[in-house]
Length: 370
Image 1 (cartoon, rainbow, N blue to C red):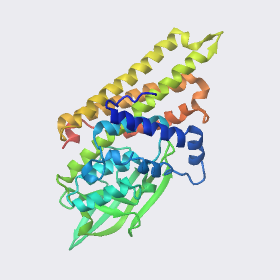
Image 2: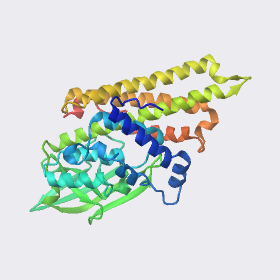
Image 3: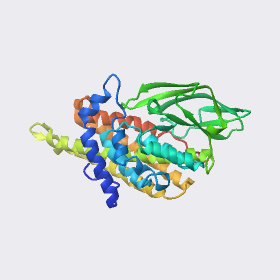
């Protein structure tokens, strides 16, 4: 995919070109496979370079030590990371956790946390089930005197094995939602890591009477539930842009294969039935890019039911388009489409995970916006 589908300004094109060169040099398919197939996979190999070249900083605005932080820049970056199948926690840390941190009323703490991410020193995660974008907290918080006790289990926290600390949403005694800052090594927190289908890492978090002082409770400029919703919508935007990037690369690889693979002495791309399938793949990718563009514009406004509707529709289109292009790319490549030696199979697995993350069975937007 030589041209980024979302870059419209000179600065955004520069960010895309710089990141693309970095990924081509440091995350080529062969080296990526080698480091992720190792006994101890290296899922942070690119993180220092992302910090050094300002890729992480681009997800934050100037108030938090970054230089962009807008929806289009984030979409530009994720559209480049998609085809390269980046497994580093950029979306989860810089975008999702970053936006939650941005609401923190303790501005000194927010700035310190953001700078630690930007400099590549720390990985912070919003602790949530990555396969359930609209679920409420799995953890309960009981208050006694000046102590808050967290109990519960959060499954499938993407990149959970890499985190230095978690932003944990919890349901309090009165039914409201509060966020708590929990360091990875805090007594009572158990992290069970494992490998996800797309070679990224994940972890289940178990909270067994995790006792926290009042200072661990995060206070925001809006209700905590609104912080959760806002962070999830930014995450959905980045994920959809990533999927759009993958679809562009899969289409390019598939169309090239159709014109080089021969059967009965002619390229199979000349068969009308396969041309129709290729056209459907192209249309699916274009549909997704169009609605991601619409979502980018909607993110300029404050959170609202209207914005949530657009993001929800975008997730549905990403799920549908991802299924169409992913499945057809594998089928049109034949047996090679599922081989470890071809990037198509790896892209297919990433799409499978991303589609579930999109929440194909999500409730209507009215419920999400509550």
